[in-house]
Amino acid sequence: MMTPQRTALHLLSNRWNSAITEYALSAAMALKGQGWRCVFSPLGDSPAESRSVGLGLETKSVPRYSAGGVLEVSKLLQDVKPDVIMTYGGPETLLARIGRRLNPGVKVVRFRGHEVPEGQLFFKERHRLSHSHCDLIVTPASFLTEILRPASTCPVETVTLGVDAEKYRCRDFDVSRSRDVVILGRLDPVKGHKEFMKTFATILRAWSEPSWRPRLHIIGEPANLSVLHLQQSAAEAGLRLESELKISPVRVANISEILSTAVAGVVSSIGSEIICRVAEEFLMCGTPIAVSGAGSLNEVLAEPGFGISWSGWSDSQTAETLDGFFKSSFGEAPATRKLRADQARRHFSYEAMGQRLISLI
Image (cartoon, rainbow, N blue to C red; front, top):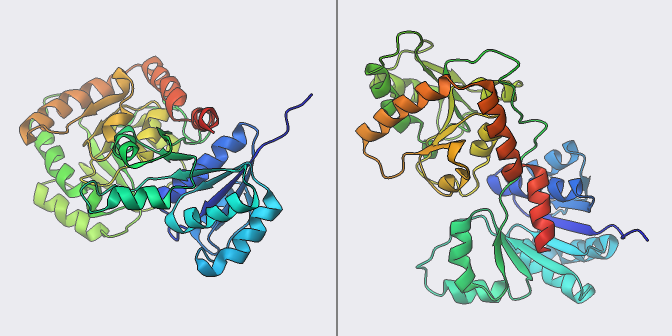
């Protein structure tokens, strides 16, 4: 006798194409890959709506996630009849209480991916009250799980973000290795571009390898930082454009090839990074990473060969260690990169995320 297909309804009130949106879409794709029916219900006319449609998810948008949206959400719950409701923000978590009244057997899973104000007055009390109807709280990082557990009446577990293994795959054996050290992500001060340029300039001034010389390649669309700002920071650091620094302020089509053939990936963020998608993408492509340690970046270094963190190091120690790291990374054999990509797939693929979610729900 065949096991009936289970259904997960993903409720997402997020208005922006943020890391929370990324996690919600990944969770839906991960469960869909495990044979679940996934109904994705983003806020109407949001980036998540168009992305959900583009990914081929069954998309049923909600015009508003507020008290005025009670009737729409009630009808959605009656039509879909989910086994599990997954919520990604406060408004939809509150509305998920309706699901309990309509179907007492439904499980409510709340994703928490924001920084938690540990010392904030009455945080634990508010958290317990607003999540009293939840069966499980999921976070993307172990450090966040440990903060939330004492404040929760239901289990709190870590489910690492999964990425598309078909899109992000090792191409190092197909094409020649570049000399680029790559920073990938939106142009925003929190990403630490300016700070890393100074470190990179220090590395170049002491560079002793005559056969090749690294170049910093920054890829990302402007957000709160313009290309002009980056160019000014480069001039202050003493980096020459094109020969020592390349800026690509666009979405690139051949992203897996660029990531696969980079000398190394760098995630230089000075804040945020609760969800470390870019770090995972480098590793899925077989490329070692150097990270600042912000947020949960150190947790991405799940295997000894994944890379290094310069968290807590002095400027001189960081530059000296990264110098050696880049030299050893440039000389890596394709087999080493392929092994790293295989290991990363076991940690960070949709398949790994889906299996982890199913084990909990």
